[in-house]
Image (cartoon, rainbow, N blue to C red; front, side, top):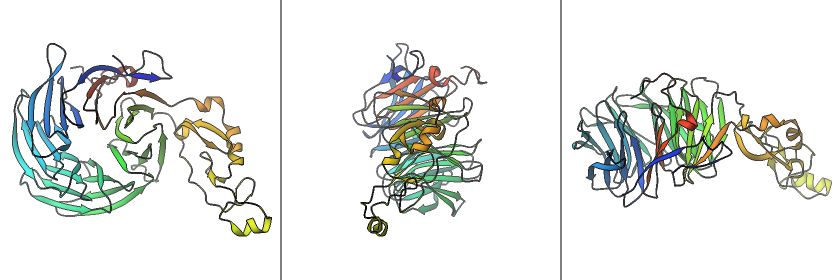
Length: 410
């Protein structure tokens, strides 16, 4: 069984290898176990399950553990076999998994939040577990003492989290569409900056520590690449989804970004090609092409005895224009517009046919994707969502395998 694909050769698509079913409620996260044919899932049905592939080719739970509250997120560290879960009641719980993945022992419970934990990350280097929650805060706690080290509050629900272990910087996306960059210390933190670009709740973040790129996906259907390391404020807008973006993963060896949305859309972006920044939209009281007033420009409407027009914007040049001067639509992938968008007539005429060549491929996961994890060394991806199904995909036809790029096979 394979996923459906659009506008690609038949052999270049995600191949569905396995479906894992059995949860009685939505699956909030699924993580591939490195170097093992195994998956860890956490669910609204209050269970943590470790699934191992049997000789039959099917996945069966080797660990089935029930907790007191729905499990919202998970962080797994394979070398130490530590697993941390976030719960709907605000608690973060640490377990230790046995080497044969048949037993899981409770280690600590951290009173991290007063409401649902939205995301969490374990840092072995600092021995911290960092979490965000619907109580509008980020917390970081010592895994050695179990004590709270610090907390910082935001104006909106904190929805997702990324962490740079080398510099101890945290990136927090929230429901207002903002991303806050913080420097965490033992007892305090400082806000470095706030990134504003999304028009909806930020649902996913991914940090690449090598390029120092931050990728964000939101309910406005868009992905933004923030060039943090360039220190020039450079951002790239990527529009290739029809619903909210809920999962991201950048693959540095193949220079590709994989993004997944709630309608099952899986988009693979070519990030190696040169791209252009989308322009800022300009403000004007009249059309910057024909000069006709917009409907709030009462003075010019009175002076010219004309009705005001609705304001639009050209996605290529950013000018404020009326509908008559922007009757054309076009894709413009170099600026991130994989779907047709509004263009002013002048900009439309400058676009050549080769400028419309897609820089992304589009695939169909055929289920709501709430969370995604990838193992590039094996070319595997796992997706899960509210339909209670976990899907394991072979992505080598779409993104290639990192084995060919320098990794050793299992």
